[in-house]
Length: 608
Image 1 (cartoon, rainbow, N blue to C red):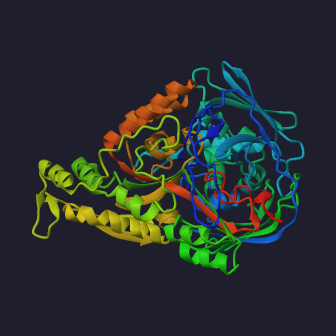
Image 2: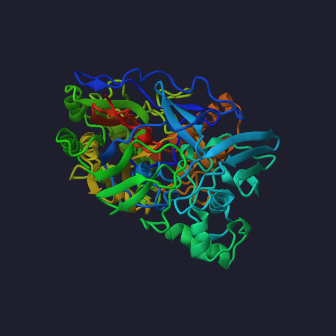
Image 3: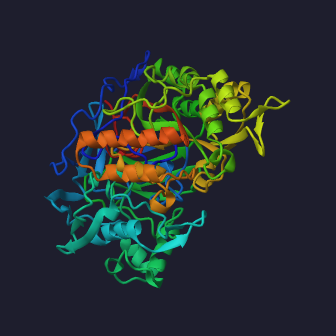
C-alpha cells in the first residue's frame, strides 16, 4: 500500500471501522474480529480515554519481515507520504492521539505517556487545550513542547507558495492544510508545555483528533532541530502569513532536511528510536534511552524488507524472522493456518486497492467514455475469487472511496461497474465514436484505447493487472503492466503513470482523505492522479466542518457520488490486513494507520 492520508470513519468517533472476521484452519487465528464498526461514535469534546503502555518483560531481539523498506523520516509531506515509513515511525515520532485495537475495533485514545490531557474547552469558538507531560523529551534531551506543535501548524497553513508542476501555486511546505487551516491562533503557555488552538468562529473542525496525530497520518517533528539547521531562533515567531526568506529557509529544511535517515536530525520521542537504516532492505529500531515511560518488550526490532509473501512465510518457518506482514496471500494464509506453530491475523481493514486514472493525460481527461469502458470491463469479482477470498471469505467488490463495507454509512455507488461486462464496454466506446481497428483495439481520432497500469513490484499486484487485462482486451482495450520497485516511493507522487494501482491506508477519521482527492491548489497534496473537481473539494471541505454525525455521513456519501460520476478512480476491494508470527510471540495484530503490524510492538511478549 501506499500510505494514505485517506481516512475512514468520522471525526465524531472514537472507534473506527477496521475489521472483518478471519477464518482459518488448524493454525491459531485471530477471532471475533468482525461486526459493524462506528455504531457509537465519540462525541465532539467528549473525554477521551488515555493509553498507557504496559510494563512488560524484556524479550530481546525481534526480526520482522515487511513488504517495503523505510524511506524518509519526514513522512508528512506529499513527496513522501508512504506507509512503509509509518511502520518504523509509529513508535518513534510523538503523537497526541494514538490508536488501539480492542475487541476487534480500533479506538482512538490520548497517548497518556506523552500527554497529560487533551480537552475541548470551548465549542464557540472551538478551542482545544493540549497539555504535554513535563517529562516528555526528544532523544537528545530537549523538551517536546509548543514549538513542535507550532511547526506542524505553520507547515500546514503557510501562505508562502511555489509554482507546482501544473503551473498552479502549491504549498512551499508540500503539506495538506486540512484541519490546521481552521485554526485561527495557536498559543503557548506553562513553559511551552500547554498548547491552545483556537479555531475560527465559523470553521469548527470535526476531526480534531487527527491534528498532530497518527489517526490523521500525522505526527510531531523536533522543531528545535529545524531551528538550528535553518538558523531560526524561535519557530513560534514565524507565522503562516509570512512569505520571506525566513519562512523559505524553514520550508527548505522541512521538505529536504528530514528526507532519508540522518541520526543527528531524525530524533525520537517515543519508546523506540531508529538506530540505522539503509532505506531499502533493513531498518533497525532500538529502545529510546530517553523514553520516560515503560520500556517496550523487544530490546531491538529489525525490519527486513521482503516483497514476496511466499518468501516471507519461508523466513518465518525457518525462524529467520519472528513476525511477517506481507501483502495478503491466499496460499500463505492457508499454509500458516494449518500449522499450530504460527498465529495468523487476517481482517478486512481500512486499506483499499484501487486504480486511478492520471487525469492530466489527455487520453483520460478528454475521454470519459474510455474511463467508463475500462471500469465496465474490469473483473472485480474475479479479483476477489482468485486473490482475496481464501484470506477473507467475506470480501466483496468495494463500492465506495470513502467508507469500507463494515462502516456505518457505507453505500455502494459502484455496483454497476467492475463486473467484467465486455459487451457494455464495447457499446460505451462505440456510442462515443470509437472504432475497432484491425488489431482489435479501439481508436478515436488521435486516441488509442491503450495504456499502462503502474504498480509496485508485488506478486499480487502483478496478478491483479493480469486479471484486469483479460476482459478489457476482449473489449478492445489494451492494458500493459508497468511494474517498478520504486513505484510507490518515486513515480506515484511524481504522477509518472498512465494509471496507477495502489492502496490507500485509511484512518479512523475522514478528514485526512480530503488531501487525496481535493484540487491541488486547495490542499490536495496527495492528489497524485491530478483529479480536479471544485464540487468535490467544496463538498468534502464542508463535511469536515459538520459536527452532526448523521449529516456528515450523508455529506461524505454525496462526495463519493461526485467521484463516482467523474470516475477518476475505480475502487477494487477492501484489502485484508494480514500478519503472522511464531506462536510464542504476541499479541500480533494490525492497525494500518497505527503502523501496521508494529503498532503495538511495545507490548510484544513471549507467551509462556
